[in-house]
Image (cartoon, rainbow, N blue to C red; front, side, top):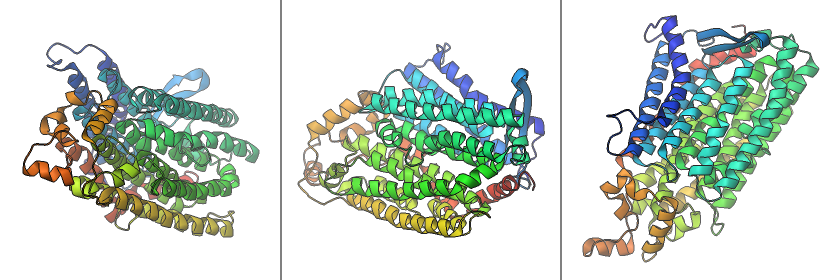
Length: 574
């Protein structure tokens, strides 16, 4: 069934447009603006260009989803196959199925929302031209990763996102941004070198880099020893990007230093590339190798779940001087642990749960990083002790709508039934209860129990965050010193005065001098902050709405992924 019948040639064009348009847009962003399009503010003009390009890509992706044949989600659609390097048998192969389509939509949506957010609140740093170009290159590489069907092209697209993210952190990030950017690039590049060796091993031993042909062969053309080596090599590169404990240590530093939109894209999109590689490449192409390493992958996954939760609890406790962005980053280690656990079960239930958790994490954690960025902009800090103890009535009393939305995102993150975070974790635990044939049931049921314990720890630290940040400790005469608050915010965002939101009163609300009289008396007890602004509501509402929709109607996503997963695990046989 297709919502609208679109010809195969148009579908091919749409998929090629989705992958290539951001790259062309990045080049256009660096060129001088044509006469008549410069406007009064060239910086705003290039930011508007970013919104236009990402919006066009999002529309094309939605049309692609509308024209997708939902009765046959296991079949590759909108396929393109063009010879590129005949000597190496490398072909430009594109296509989408029920596994990749949701990830394309998530990537296009998050990038558009980041561009929309940046248009009204440009990040402090160098020229917006370079910023917009880097975001568009990042989008192109990510979309290509989910759309290509050739192993070498997958590797090129996988690596394409590293340089843009490095510069987004290093040039537009906060404190310790240089060290965090170097740590990010070194970890991911070293992992990628090992991954390339594994990809070359598969291609040379099988005689092809065609991912569809290799998945259909289901490892029959590869010996068990070759599969084991390939899974080890490729798995290390994918595990770094996921990130899997203990290869995760680059992530908290990168998130803490990255600008708001950098954190949103890193958590919402880039982490999904690693887990997608496990599902698209290792499960169908090297099943024997995966079966060998599945118990170890599951063990690392559940350690990551518990470790990430304990790290969050340590950051959330009073007096720990924990950074809220760092806490959300560690929570990602735990959430991605559930994704890896589902993949390690090698069952349709577990893999479907992993794919659902992937999308849910992108929506919820993307929203959380948007909100934490807004809180940091208003308070001038993301330090939990400061947010909880030195800010009067905290968010519920100072910016009630912002506080309510932060509480909603935190509750969604802990896996409350009825919201998106619930289904992925539940399905991965069900998959671990009855893993694939050949895997130890007692071991996986132990992993299931540890993972279930991790959900309790997740609920504990998220509720502590809500209590401390949203409710705070009501100390009527306690407030941030206005001069210090303004100085710290000015240091973090030197261009804040030029941002459009300054005109709607945000600047005055962020700790500036208050008028005398009744308003002045109120600010002495519970100083008010700017609540959710129009541009923030535009960027955040789709994520909140989709979190609810996915929680109440999971069949929309599972109906796409399940047939494709069944075919993938059956060796290309429906």
